[in-house]
Image (cartoon, rainbow over all chains, first blue to last red; front, side, top):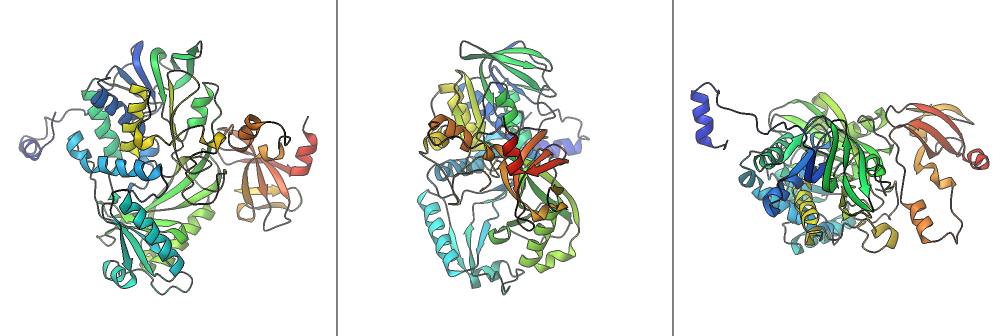
Length: 417
Length: 90
């Protein structure tokens, strides 16, 4: 089933009776070439690119809950490529380029909206840091513009420019950054993978990883044993538990990150605005809700909901940045479970077990990485070679100290990112 | 979330600074080798369920404490001084 303007018109005129499910809800077979543990954005994207780029379609995606019910449905939908460290820089740049062709590639409306992201600065020193980051972004082949206070004021007049503690000096704008509809990304990749022969198996929890002589042979699940030549762990948020089934301890601590949405309002915030000093970022969904989030609660958690001190902090930061937000009423809040690594950057690598691969540690950057991670992970699983844009995401960098990607410059240590 | 400090009693979570897993009180010997040190510094059990982590009563008595918590529910089961936890180790 292809989507098009003509198809929408025809269905509209014939009672919308022609729409079909977007993907097959498959039952597990006893054997696959590749089993992907985790039916989130990254797992589905990996399955899609395995089939599309490498011709490997005898693939199962095993999801313990329902498709799109994990972190891909629990983020703040921001897509950007404003990283600076070698490793992150080329990876997110590649991912953003994939985003730009994603809807045509998938024939699916993921509502990718390049509305621009503005990172605010509040001092001369921060302006210099913003200029440096902007130059790094231009060097990596992406766009960046340094906005003066007057430029910014014309674009977003509603900020509190003269705040006593954080006066706004300007912002770093990436026009190609923006947002996308998170659920649609999962559905679009699921549809594309399913059309190419991938089995998407929901309500199928992996309970064990089978190995023999140092090589993976399959997985045990709540729906029976499945043999596989290769197994990919792509379960950010739960990586430690699944890796433990293969006897691995990961450099990961799981943390809670909260986000919020207000009641639907008329269009008022046209960009993604990041207020780093308040750990606050905000955009407006196409439905009208103001979607915003804060910093980690800063303790290990799998609860998928946070505590009140961070709720209070986020609301205070919002009021500090844009006092008009005080008139909006918060509708919902939720939490995502973050795989936090010591240096704040992810892992796409082989493991010590032959045929077992790991895609994990996405910290708070997982959503925008979905296409890039799927593309690079599929390359690694199919060819056993690292894909150049993700070649630095090695699992052993913490042990060796080589190639750490500490984007914030705070040190490679748990609890600092 | 409220944490019961062994010295001050039950206090709001905001009074405490979170350091991380309680492995920090099991520091290896300086000559234990690179593998042991890598494991100590980076790798974590990261359990979904009962965990023990190290907190600092920053806005209180300044004690380092080991808190036993449930990471699925945020229930705090107990806390003891890090010194005592260290002394109890086998």
